[in-house]
Amino acid sequence: MPTGKAPNTEPVCCLAARVVRFSLMGVLLSFCSSAQGQDNGANSSWDARLEEASAFLYQGEFEQARDRCTLAMSLASNEEERAGTLGIRAWACIELGEYGQAISDATTLIKLKLPTMAGYVLRARAYHGNGEYERSAEDCVWMIQLDPPEREGYACRARARTAMGDFVGAIADLHRAIELGPDNVDLLVQRASVYWLKGDDTLARIDFTAAAKRCDRLRDAGEAFEHVPCGYAYLGTGDDPLAFRSFDLAASSHRRINEARCGRARVYLQMEQYWRAKEELDAAIRVFPHDGELYYWRAKAYWKMGNKDECEIDVQRALRELPQKGRLPNEAKLLLERVRGAKRLSGP
Image 1 (cartoon, rainbow, N blue to C red):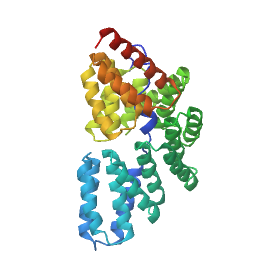
Image 2 (tube, one colour):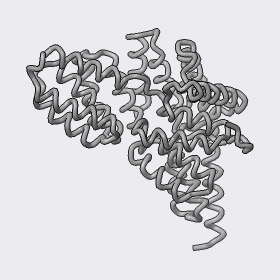
Image 3 (spheres, rainbow, N blue to C red):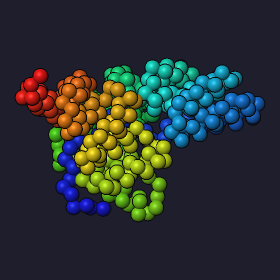
Image 4 (cartoon, rainbow, N blue to C red):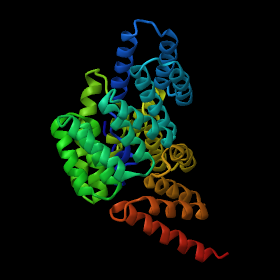
């Protein structure tokens, strides 16, 4: 749905770090269902608490999901029940930005080996959110070794490599992931974002366009699709209204809420609604405190609102969290020079 606007040539917020989620929730809930079936209703108290936790998780009520899992943990009677509960709680903690607890739960899940892949997926995400990118990459390697045909391990390592500034390695991983899942919109958008960060606008535009067309086909056919990656695809092709609608649909359905906040913030910046952009970024930063890109975007919002002091603080934090090379740290350095120059001119 073209709008006649010039394509958005700025980086797409929140993509490279968090775009891949795939079917982990389905894996965990299927595993829990299996555990429930094995006890033949013998542990009805655990069943009830875990069903409540799962429902809260789907509704985006992450604190309630975490607390119900903690209660269910005290009622678990075997390793299968304990493992299923740990997985759901780790997921809820990741959504809340409670990465220490998530890492602990995922590590226990790995030791139990039930289910094998889920523990590494969860811990890799928690390490990433906590800014421990090398450890995240190590868990991604385990995922690749455990299930080479599965694209998630390659996409996971691409996230970690992107955060560390290894754009060439990230793109190589995403090439492999896309070979395994050629129609996956998440992967196309993730690769487009890495291309942009690397400085290759042409290839970024190709991937964003391919992803947006895929979203159009799914929508026109009435098929189910993820709104968040489609929102970023539309944002990358300059269709801000359709991007915003996609992010709103994601948030209203409680799916990928924090990623939707990042996307809405980007659209608000384009619409010059800087205060709203800041509010969305405030919420996202509470969950992703080591994401340099979020601080950069909030610094831009502060700059546009004339708040030079807060702008300087955020851009300095962005430069601490971002990799040393790439387009975004270069832009952050320019913004820092600009705000410091403005402060010198305005005097004490």
